[in-house]
Amino acid sequence: MIRGDLFALTAALVDIPSVSREEGPLVDLLEQELQLPHLTVDRVGDNLVARTNLGRSRRLILGGHTDTVPPAGNSAAVIEGDRIFGVGSTDMKGGLAVMLELARTVTEPAVDVTYVFYAREEIAIIHNGLREIEAERPELLEGDVALLGEPTLGAVEAGCQGTMRLRVVMAGERAHTARPWMGTNAIHRLGRVIDLVAGAENRTPMVEGCEYREALQVVDVRGGVAGNVVPDEAEIVVNHRYAPDRSPEEAEAHVRAVLAPALGEHDRVELVDVSPPARPGLNDPLLAALIERNGLEVRAKLGWTDVAFFSERGVPASNFGPGDPTIAHTAGEYLERESLESTFAALRDLIRVCA
Image 1 (cartoon, one colour):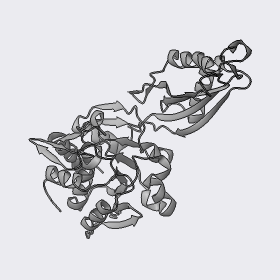
Image 2 (image 1 turned 90 degrees about the vertical axis):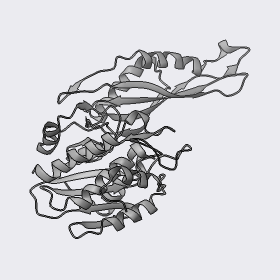
Image 3 (image 1 turned 60 degrees about the horizontal axis):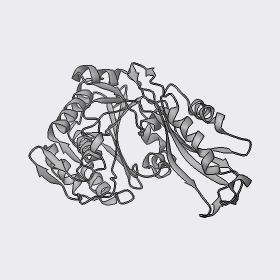
Image 4 (image 1 turned 135 degrees about the vertical axis):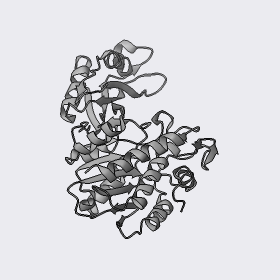
C-alpha cells in the first residue's frame, strides 16, 4: 500500500468500494497494513482497532468510519490538480488515510494511541460498529479523550448536538366529504401543530464557549383515507436538534410543551428515536494543545456524530478531520490536498509532542 504520499493514499482508499455493510475488503487491507511491531491489532467483525501499549499516562482515541454512502457515478477516484473527486473522499477516506499513515509511521508517540476503524456509520445507529465493539470487546475503546476524523475543513467542531424524532398523531372523526360537518378532519387539525413547530423560538446557547443552534422541524406528514372520506387520523414527525446543555429528557419535555396547545384528549405524541448530545470537552489538555499549537478555529458541531458515543461514556470528544462537510454525500464530493496534509501535520504534532 502507498506510503509517504497522503494524497495518493486517499485516492487508493477511494478506489476500494466500502458502501455500508460492504466494508470487509477495505478492512482486510487495513488489517494487513497495520501488522506492525509497535501495534496490537484486534478485529471485531468488520471493525478494526490498532493500539500502542507503551505505558503512557494518557490514551488518545482516533476514530473513523470505513463505510460510505452509495456512489452517484463517482465510485472511482479522479484527481484534478490538488483535488481528489470520488465517493467518500471527504466523508471520510481522507480521514482514514490520515489515521493509517499516523498508525504506520509514529512508532513512539508521546501518548498511547488507539486507532478505531469502524463500520456502518452511515446507516441506522443500531448497526453502528462502535456498538458492536463495545458489546464484544469494550476494553478496546478505553481512553482519556477522542477525536473523530469527520470532515471539518481542519477546524475543531466541538461536541455535537443531540437529535430526536417524535411522531404526533392527531385524532379526528370520519365522515363523507359531502357532509364534512358530521366529522372532524384530522389533517386540518395538523395545521395548528405545524404552525406551532414553525413558529417555535429556537435557542442559541453558549456551551463552554461554543454557540449551538437548536432547531425544530416537521420532517414527515401522513394522512388520508380516500378521496371522499374526511380523515379520522393524521400524523407528522418532528425532528429536534438540541444543544448539549440539555439532557434528552429535557429536550423531549421542551418539544412536548411546544406541541401541547394543539393537542386534545385523544391525540398522541410518541418518541420515535433519540441520540444524546456531547459537550465540547475543550478543557481536556490534549484537545487544548491541538487547538493552541495549531491556531485552529473552534466551532460547535450542529449535526450529530459518534462523538456522542464517547461523551456518554465519560470520554471528552470532538470532531477534527480533512474535507468540507457541506459537500459530503454529493455526486461532486471532493477533497483538497491542503486540508488533508494540514490535518495530518496537526495530529502528528499532537501525538509526537504533547503528553
